[in-house]
Structure formats: structure tokens, C-alpha cells
Length: 80
Image (tube, rainbow, N blue to C red; front, side, top):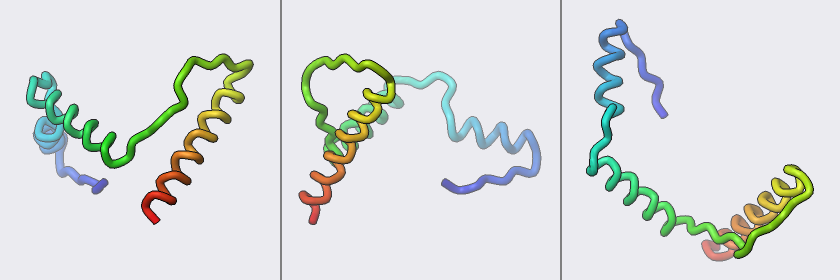
């Protein structure tokens, strides 16, 4: 991401309006939906089905990290 420099607050405000829309319309939501769909096609995440209970947050995070490691290994094998 580039670093943007501004000479004045007014210039910053003008640029901010260009970068962000205050009231996103249907077109904005459609762009986001297409972006998410493309991301899902390029890097599909698969989680084991079902609901799990954990005794602690650390236990839940460690299982999530295991799933992530398995996902990365599967991608490496697929793309090698």
C-alpha cells in the first residue's frame, strides 16, 4: 500500500472522498460480492463440519492453527 502525502487538510479531504464512499450503493455491494467470490475461488477454505466445544480459548485457537497449517500444506501440494 502506498504512502500518501498531503499538503493541506483540504487536499486530504478531497482525496478521502475519492477513496471512500459514505453511502455505498448497490454497485459497491456488487463489487464486494464479486471480490469475495473471486477470493473463494482462488483460495478456498475448507473447515471440518460440525460444532465443537473447547475448554479454553487457547485450545480453540490451537485447533484453528492446525486447520490453517493443513490448508497451507494442501495448497502447497496442489500447486507444486
